[in-house]
Amino acid sequence: MNKKQYVYIVECSDGTYYTGWTTDPERRVRTHNSGRGAKYTRSRLPVKLIHTETYEDKSEALRREAEIKRMTRKQKERLIHGQDILPDGKKCNG
Image (cartoon, rainbow, N blue to C red; front, top):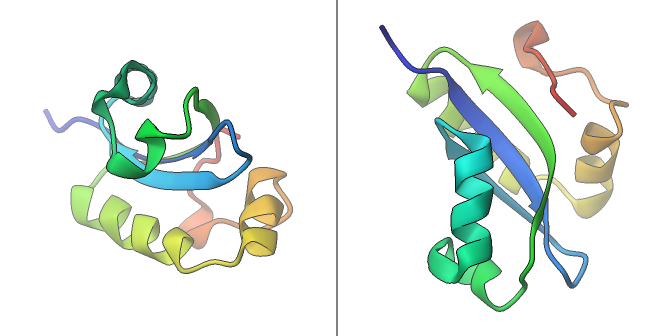
């Protein structure tokens, strides 16, 4: 059985966004907040999970992560607030 893959966005304490992928968003946020996450988030703690998308396939999730990372802040805000359609009708967990 394949684990579901998630693309997530967290909001850092300085108001910036960080995008990543994981198989367990809640655990990943705990890792970030413990200071053992991405280098970018270590100096911007705590982080808050504000958006997730679910995928069946890791490569699909990684493609979406890269796509979101290329978005402008304004585009990310539209995505976070549910104003953009997700690719292929994927589930948005907001």
